[in-house]
Image 1 (cartoon, one colour):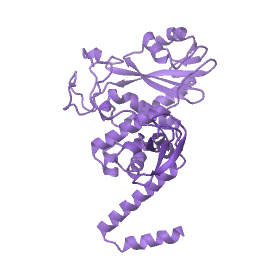
Image 2 (spheres, helix red, strand yellow):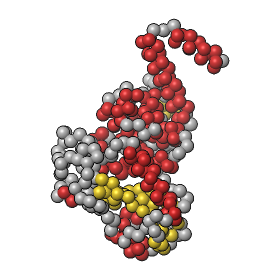
Image 3 (cartoon, rainbow, N blue to C red):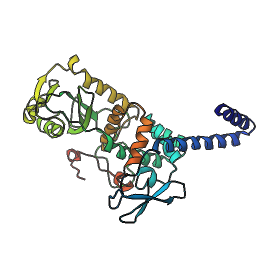
Image 4 (cartoon, rainbow, N blue to C red):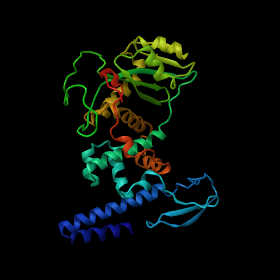
Length: 340
């Protein structure tokens, strides 16, 4: 049956002109994406009323697009399954989001996402911000307790003010370096942003911003307080901040050579992170934490990432609005004498 249908479609496409064929292929692709979305989300059950939290629900008609509506028996409120979710709040069809998710999972640049999905560059950027915000909820929390072995290390990235600053009140505190320009100071200076990273033996990892320049004991304690618990077994390189920080946190600490194979897990994490960020040709520091979350999410959901991301963004309300993501002030600007 499927082969006969495919042969019939091929014959019809062959008889069409170039413009008609292109339009037909685009419509077929949208139908396939819509069907894929329905297949993935068909098992997402409504669990509670979004207003009062009651689980006493009955079916109450359908939306214009054919999706099911529900009514709460307690507060009598009607709502749809996609209410307040990423797909439900968007004016774009589900097929467009499915197409964009493929681009997102492949880490394609915004201009290519915009071209493939037939949306504006700004819309492609906002779609990426919304997806990243939703995925933050599903990132496994890293916590190493007693007896858990953890490898720690930090990496340093150039501070970047990438973006269009013609709008808004922000002004560059230094001349633009453009892509590939050198830093004003050599070595590990405060013009570089410290990213604290760690990997447990189970494979779970974390990555977070930890201030400017070489890591200090105070910053190490602040960054690791929610990740390293008492009794954890920590290995790190010769950074001077770690012994004192581990003593404060109550963790057993072993210092090893930076090139030792004993911390190869965290070294591999740095290598993968560099490859991930290179594809974007620079990431603005003000959005860097979101990209670190994206990187960790990709590590956690290596298989069936398309299905995982659709289930995740369709299961929970989408937090934040456009104004929360525009005109964001970069972190650590006190170094330049600027405050948010």
